[in-house]
Image (cartoon, rainbow, N blue to C red; front, side, top):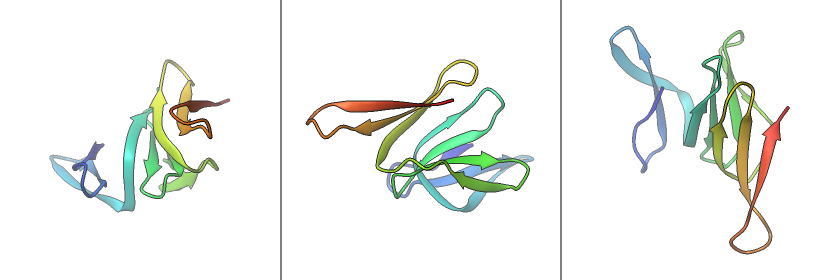
Amino acid sequence: MWKEDCDDFKLKKLVGTRWIGWGKMYASSVAADDRGNPWIVSYGKEVFRWNKITESWENMGLKNVDRVVVGSSKHIYAMKKSKKRGHYNIYRWL
């Protein structure tokens, strides 16, 4: 998976030897968990996870997010600006 550039937030995936557009989803932040499932922060600042079974993006229910990151096994985090200027809240999925 690949984010085309910082201007248009287009997602692409490798199919065979070609990079193709990945639906109509746009992302400002991209990460993949230990099972290879992509997690993104959409252009609308919501967190989504790719569901391989339904082949669709699942909204994970967190809004106004700036970044999604993945640590070791099953550690997925999102950073969201705090009401306190210059601070962030960190959320973890369990």
